Length: 323
Image (cartoon, rainbow, N blue to C red):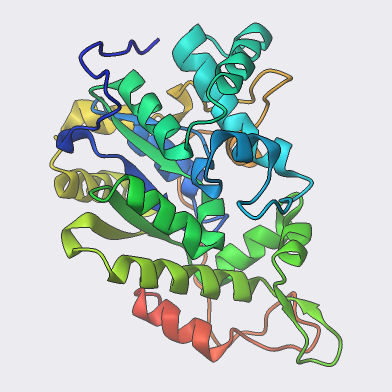
């Protein structure tokens, strides 16, 4: 159990431990990469907290926007579990039914705090470690990213990439993937019959990330291709650690290549089972890469009209180094 540092009593965050956020669309190796980095001895990998998708903890818990509108009916399952598991682990020392019950009480007593204040308290709890978090939900609105940056103007960001064809196929295969695309209005009506089109999500999210990062000093962000992490984890993890100013010897590499040792790398108790991608939770190991090469001109299997990747998607993928 990580103990709080009593010296950090004012909610401040020292410059040395500004958090690291992973920015990427869903199904872009975020669970694996975030957990791997969080196993570095100087870092702490959170599950998906989703805190900055609301202004206050009460709004987060009830699933309401600042204008009073309701978020998705799936909000309690999709968004709460990561926070519940984190609080149970850090304050009860265990992710059990009783530990999660304590987490419910912890959240209720902080209902009027901003989500930024709550995140700062979690960082105080893990001091002096650097918090690592990834919540793909932040990518759906620029407001969420701006709220995050307002709280942590010196935070570090990794723009995590995945080939558009692979990411799209993964979203369509994922449990609830098609429903998520419908909710996000990723629909192409141009073919006469509307088609669920995951390319829209890949393109729009990555453009939103690019626009967000464009306003930051270059030293604050790093672009990483998930495929490179899988192909050569030693080299790519060393590159990331070098950018962060952290050591990356044999000890650190061995720790990061064992994501299954994270306290969040498994299915949680019945009252907070998720907090990360379910496929990762069921098999969290770093496995040998089985990566496929794709032809941009190849017809897409989900398109009944036989179309290939959209030119705007291809252009952006090439900019990211995909060929």
